[in-house]
Amino acid sequence: MDTFKAHLNKFITVTDEEYASIFSFFKEIKVKKKQDLMLHGEICRWMYFVSEGCLRKFFLNEKGAEQTTEFAIENWWITDTFAYERQIQSDFCIQAVEHSVILAIDLQQQELLLKKHPMMERYFRMVYQRAYAASERRIRYLYEMSREELYVHFSTLYPWFIQRIPQYLIASFLNFTPEYLSEIRAKLRS
Image (cartoon, rainbow, N blue to C red):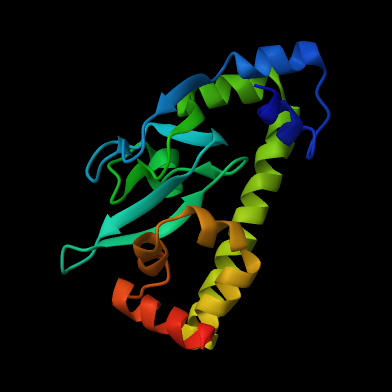
């Protein structure tokens, strides 16, 4: 609970009383490693905030392989934004990478939260702006960088991912095969 309050206070200022009210709009959920929170084809009903642990979003590509598009660690949000905003079926899956504690909010509760606490509009705007900027940068890096540069950049920018997340998932996120990632890592070590 305190993790979320500290996170909110990086963007907005909330009193203990306001925080207790804000927190009441969320469900706290404990999930096990590899537990699915959303499957392909399900209506995207929830947006998740990671208090502890790590989640990932992925889809199955044309070869049937999992293609990871996003990770969320502590203090990060994750959902299929397009499907969540429209309350439609998702083309993605969301799964726990580690045992995790998350806060979940559905669209109806989020709307009620925003009406009762208008400062949360500012909070979500700032979170979405940062997420959008990160997506723009990732797209640019995918176009500009060689595969090796992409890995070096990722491992430099997010060293904690390299420590925490299984290599096959990092390979999936970078659009590598696990074998190719092993080759790059071996080359960089020598």
